[in-house]
Length: 122
Image (cartoon, rainbow, N blue to C red; front, side, top):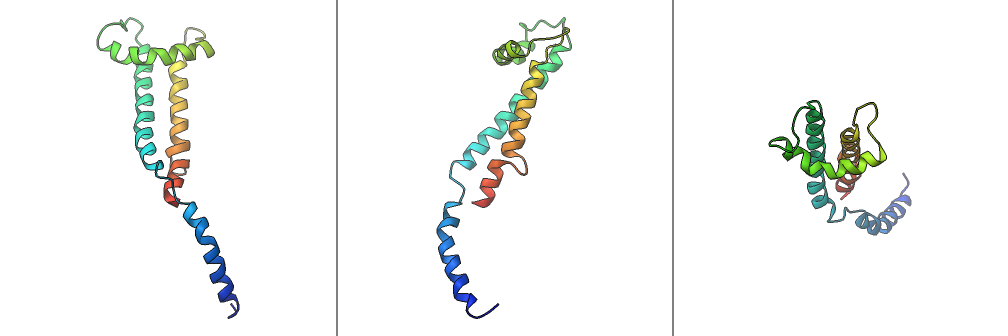
């Protein structure tokens, strides 16, 4: 590198400093990540329990302990059944929510997730 290139490089670094400061992660990324990760995991876990309960058709879903799994999930599943109706006696609506939560968790919080990359740049 030439001696004349040093002042040019210094000028470029000085000009890029405000850009680097604006690339810092917003302060909301950390709290959102810390709430979103357990929430999406909880959705996946409860929907997986719902799939397991569906394997036992003789289980009374209005009695304990099944009501603890079925009551909170029924609203989401009812909406999903309107879009993806059960076919051949198989209700795949819990599987749809497991897939959605898993996809969102990976896109936002995975190794190359959007929020993770935002935190790493900050």
